[in-house]
Image (cartoon, rainbow, N blue to C red):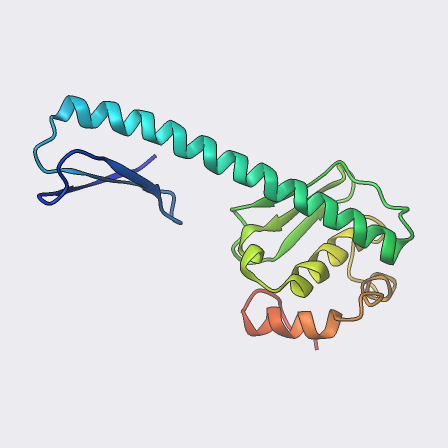
Length: 166
């Protein structure tokens, strides 16, 4: 993990840490702290922040799983099954992906900041891939069960995440 140390003359005793969106551990420390004390604090705070981040991700994934179950019941009569659905950080060009054979669904973590109706569309889209692994007419008939599909697709196109297929 990349660490950025910011020393301050105003800070007298405390050391503060935060994990930036880019994954950099930012440490704010007193100007006169010894290198040994600083390294011990970095190690301790880094472990604590990583644990917090992992717990937050697990909580978000559990909420995503619950929402997928609700949408499965609403739009697919509860018939779909999958192995896992989770947020991932490595999808920069797409909003989600599905591996039907493995039953794994991955949703871009960028969607956490998008409106719920957009996330719901992406979940429904990926759930539909469990039935139709392509973008055929049958696939879009499944996705269009979600009433805000067109609106959500427009939102994602405007955000540069989804392509306009005409």
